[in-house]
Length: 258
Image 1 (spheres, rainbow, N blue to C red):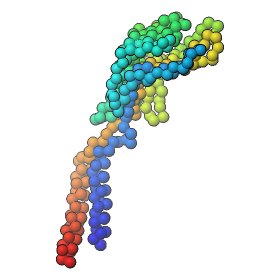
Image 2: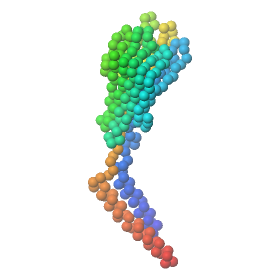
Image 3: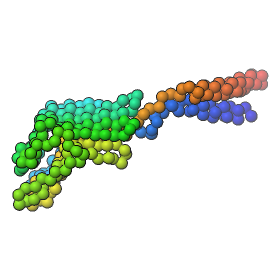
């Protein structure tokens, strides 16, 4: 009988503690996360070995939350100045903000259409309880013979890169926004996709991404139980503590008497 009383008390006590501390657990199973990087290159240029670089200056809400790189040079592909990245999570609201900015960008990869450059290429991604939003800012950006680019291009602006005789050799996507299966959002400020083909005049195949930010979904930690729920939890613990304590004392006295 004593064993049953103690066991039942222990189970109820655990239930009370669980009820009391339920508010300590996050409101969602996986709180919001975020990440960012400045440059990633995965290309095979015509007649040359494959080039795989990056992601460079990677930041993550799990750490490091910020990163900086002075410059990047991938011969024949891309040159940059300073890269700054950040991925921050607000512990009290669960909001996540990720940013990546890449300065003084040049793309010799696309030199066949003229000088391709930008003073600054920046991607921003923000996740709140209302959802995820993203944006891209291009400062003094030009796409060779195709001219200047919008400062804030529309989501998934796609530009075909064609060469005389050769035809369509690449696609440039500005403010590329990708909803991921886990509920997060990825914003690639500039994504250059080489179409391959291998023929005369082909640039090659692969991808170059400049300034990428991923965020969300946001997670809001629930505060510890308060108000009526707190008093109910404490009261339940008090009620349970009495029989459990009494049973333990009674057992010790019986043992001494024996």
